[in-house]
Length: 187
Image (cartoon, rainbow, N blue to C red):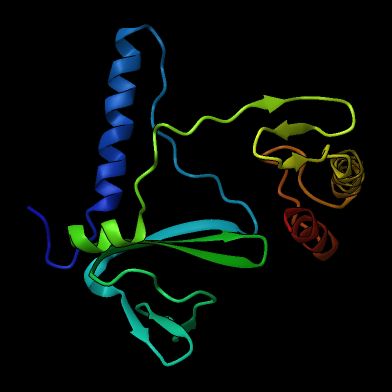
């Protein structure tokens, strides 16, 4: 029996986890469901649809969730309809909301244009350009990736040298510099 205003989504996730566990058990693998790991600045939670409301302003939309103040959204809500639920995710110091909306078929077709299946496109990979398309578009090679990978490696090394517990049962608190460095790396 489900209590009123109880979110169903966590129980659906638990059901999927146990279905995977029993399916893997038949194959000889043990994959018992585990709790999500605690990480700094990386978390998420689910809010059931009747507990969250979208308030439309003249220039900005706001999101009203229980036990939270009004949250200003950076983008206007594109669809009209009943909100089924929302997942709020934190990555670094940014928060992202994924909203599930029940819309009509006409509104869905208005926002999603049909894809023409008879279009063809040729792709040529080369030396000067990463890819040249037959419609004239050229995609340049992603050279900044090497610089960003070196930056990430350097900051990972710096993070591992900060004070934190190396094993699970060591009992050392994470230093403020560790938390700041992990936030910088997550960004």
